[in-house]
Length: 294
Image 1 (cartoon, rainbow, N blue to C red):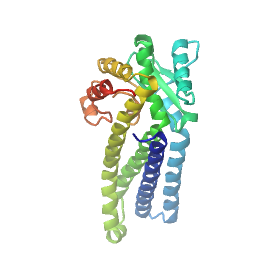
Image 2: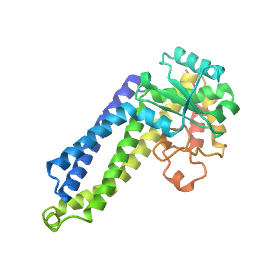
Image 3: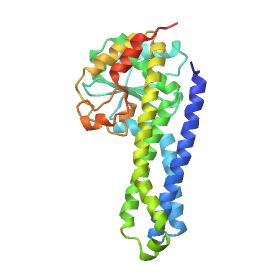
Image 4: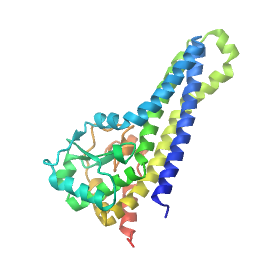
């Protein structure tokens, strides 16, 4: 089995490569837009600022952006004392820094974690799960989310979501701007423009595919490690079974935040399910039930 440290190093390398590639694409799209409007180096500088700003915001503020977008409320120990004590005990037992705890006012059953590392992590759970799910099953869910935090999966997912969003915005701007390009730029930079337009279409699609592949592989690993953290994989399997039979959607979820949740928040949307970043929940349950802790 791959060590935790090895997994973290692999995730950090993947993230570094992704940041470089996306930053280059942002600069390239910015150059093309600059050329269309004859902005010269000013346009290149603006695209550089956008690339740097996107990376800065993704790294330092992705957690706060996600929490606000999902209407997460800070949790006080007095509100859910048994739950808070359970999470604290699991963290102490597994030598994990205690994350900030939040909840969302909805009857749907779901949870997610966010934050770039253990010191800046937050675990969010729905009020519906806190009210209706046995505490031992919730421990399986928390084990899953703590695994994401330890392996720095959330940092990758957050970066991908935000940076792909910036690229998509620039891509749309390029398609709009291309309609106003001058005849001179059409003659001199036709090939570059063609490549740029191709990027503007293909990069968001590629980003979605990357997001799906990364999220699905990370979910399987988080299930396995989460089963170890909570002490019994079957507890997580029971929780996933309960969640899978909950028909309520998460109204605040969107395509950018959906990969963060432990289960696909778009329960009844067949089109959204087609591009789900989550593996089949029944397969996840089967794997967990087959796990044997040594």
